[in-house]
Image (cartoon, rainbow, N blue to C red; front, side, top):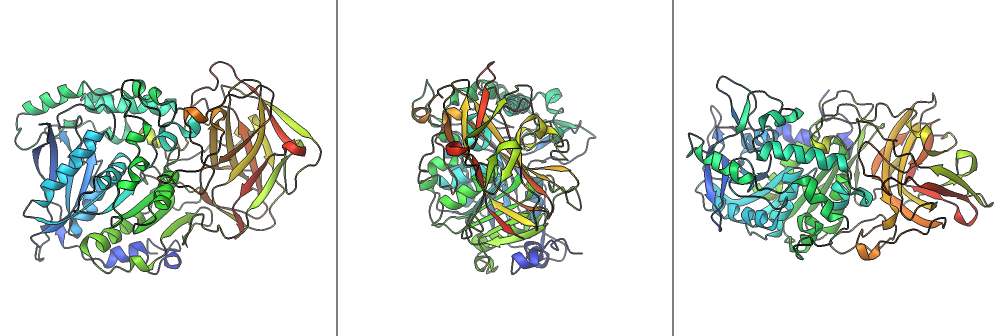
Length: 614
């Protein structure tokens, strides 16, 4: 069975992996050359350059389009004498895919990381973005360059692609941000306005280990557990590592995540010491209007991609509507390390995203007629159906009426609202969590191989509402939106809303979730640089409002998008909690509120589900 047999042949005219299979592979990956490149302020960046080398029996070109990879996670590791292992684990998958197919690859340690000099006052800082423009200046001046450049990468590297595009370098023709944020605030560190405390701590540990070359710390992270890793690789001109030691010493001045992120309790609120710097500064959406309309954009994410990276991919697609644009959402976690489907054939993720990226760059960098522009612009994977779908709009079946189910007395999720006034009380438990196999671990560089394996019974500790059995297979596609009437005993609270499938035999499966600090309940028009098709919350201080204890408030909250087929005979469950102790901070601190949920009358709560019969 070919690797693209999961219905790709119906979702694409030419399936991505079918395209890749017929694409010539004329080159091999050479050992890189490395050097320092001086920036405008004298800061030296370490770069690795991979120029395709002709495979045996093949004729080599002399000039190549270039793909850039800007990373804070070491462009390449040094290896202990006699040691072994992949020396560039952060970029190897992309390097080994594109170089053999005729692309030069340039990997860069961003300033303040790896073997580069400098310090970091933020991630993706304005200085770092200016550096990327200068690196492209250098690339296009090289004799092996065609003068055409693309940028890609997973996570941090993908967002760096967005920011490079915003520098408006004329050589940059296409970017493929992979599993990367558009808004660092709500889609990464503050989903729903609540800080992911576990992510903040884990990521700080990782960056201290890398930036300070603390190898004993770094080896605790699964991606970097190879005991032969011996710090960042010095550049060729630094054979004894003396310059590397100087660079690492400068990194000791880098910002600390645990101290930095709490400064951003409100979106777009400036730092107290720098009125020009807010969460928008390190979020690509803030510079959306600077990205030239002729730069092609491929956004890729997965249904378990962290706290909201799939929202980022969708919003990037919606916002850059004048650019050549493509969107792919698959059965993946952060970085497509794992196929997250409970019905997967194998644990390892298929790689149609790599093949799609190849076709994309072939189209927009090499200028080949790949047929990509004739394909639907959106492709997404339906879990449980285990099939790819194509769409021309988001949400994918937005022209069809959605289904509204109502939170009703006795824990029912009913087709019609109860006319009688009713409510359900729920005491928030600050010890309640969602476990260690969730969407949040992978973004903190913590390994996950099974997602929500212990979900069974967790919603029994929440306020849960369950539908009647479905009479036919039914597919959810897009954002479920809860319309909740809620009162709190405290002037602030949080709601965590979970969607589950209860199969006919009683097995419970996690589907998706949405969270919101009720201080941020106001729904606002989305700005031009941040388009959504779901309720938008600004998370700005001026829109924040405490609750009046005991008074009902209406809360509209979009759950994270997914595509999921519910089986015939299954029931849909909506569950509401007030905390996730394994990942988030308390709201309010030390004062677990008592929530009152409206289940009838003028305070009847409901959830709108983009469902259709499968």
